[in-house]
Image (tube, rainbow, N blue to C red; front, side):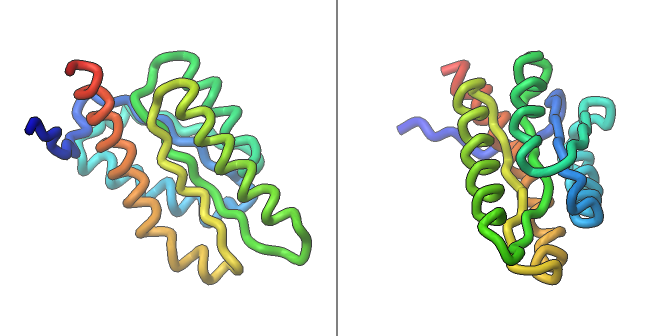
Length: 152
């Protein structure tokens, strides 16, 4: 059996990050954590592009347009959708997640969805480091995996 090995080398990869500003303190902290992790994995600073948008619903459209440029190997989506008193939480959480999946499949490009969906600010803050680190790892691993698959 041929086994594709995990590859966490970011050398030569171009990563796009899109951050929702609505919960800017959380999203900005996530960007900082992921940026450091991407650099540790070998992604060159000049190969990381950050775009910010108003909220979680604008993230997929921005990634779709960045993906259309064919200049990126993977994307990371950051933001936080925090439950309020209305149904809006479910709408934003569900639609942004589904749209990110659709963009990834349509463009055959990995998107690490790290848009947090939490009950409150405290839960979001508690997840910043773990989710941002995981998103950086996923983006690099999946970009390398798809490159390997294309060479089979």
